[in-house]
Image (cartoon, helix red, strand yellow):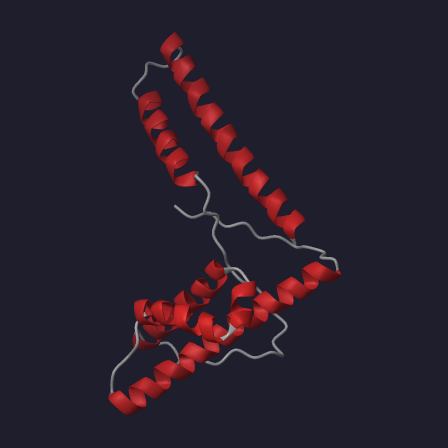
Length: 169
């Protein structure tokens, strides 16, 4: 299960520079693979899928060292966005367009890759155990406390990640 957080930030000069690099790199990767998909289809009558593009991204990073400066997950997400745009095209939506530098809407997606999967499984298990307890019993109260502690741990992990990320920027 993925959760999204949307933030309005007021970055300092270094952070603005890092964000500009990230936006530019994501746009470059999206446009590069859109061009590759178009050329591959025109020459070989074959389409590149997400896995081929993601594997090729590794080679592209060795050629273009500046792609290593930004978040790798953000670059992979831009390839996923392109793949989704192609799937939408085949379902009747318009053909994917190249991204422009002059578009004033800048955003990118990334994922938190901490220990959150293990904690989510613990939460799921604790909630299942809670649902089987008789309400207002002592065991129900203990199980409820366990679930609350796991929720608190998840919230603390997310806050810690966000604080570390904002400090790093």
